[in-house]
View 1 (spheres, rainbow, N blue to C red):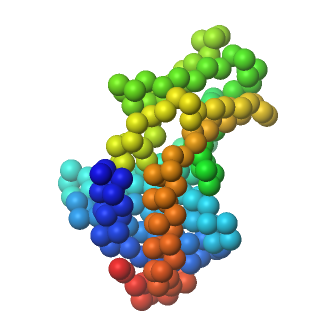
View 2 (spheres, rainbow, N blue to C red; view 1 turned 90 degrees about the vertical axis):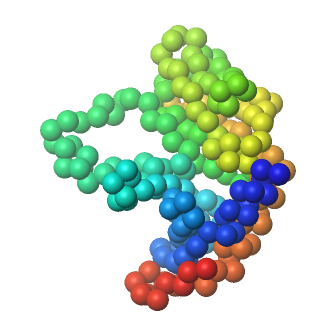
Length: 203
């Protein structure tokens, strides 16, 4: 079963745990050289950040790609802020999960709730946001479902709109909730060091 395959891959990866600033930070190194980094809130166990990095074609480290959490501006981008500034009114798409749902937010969308519609494209394995006023269109996947080869379910999708932000929720299936619970129990067993300690233990 694909869910079990992904679970086994996570368990067999080399993991390093650090406790810092109220967060449990986990670094995964997979056999193919890919890296995944996650951050969990120590109090609530909520996933705050998940990002991925692959080796580049020149065998160096590629850039981190954010899957969950706030996008972090690169140093180069920060240096260019005085020259080229992004329009702050442009929609900003990001993912912030809850315990029971995958959740995405699209900021800077001032249109009323009735303008938006959500659908699922099973063939392309993606969700689609449309607006009747043709002002916004977005396709996005659910990587967690792709990794576990679970089907998209349109009945799991819902959305709300408040404060110029569209909030899209996808209810997690039993398989995903079980996988996340088991993984969290494994991560809590890892011997974690505090930020600044040099003898990081790897499992």
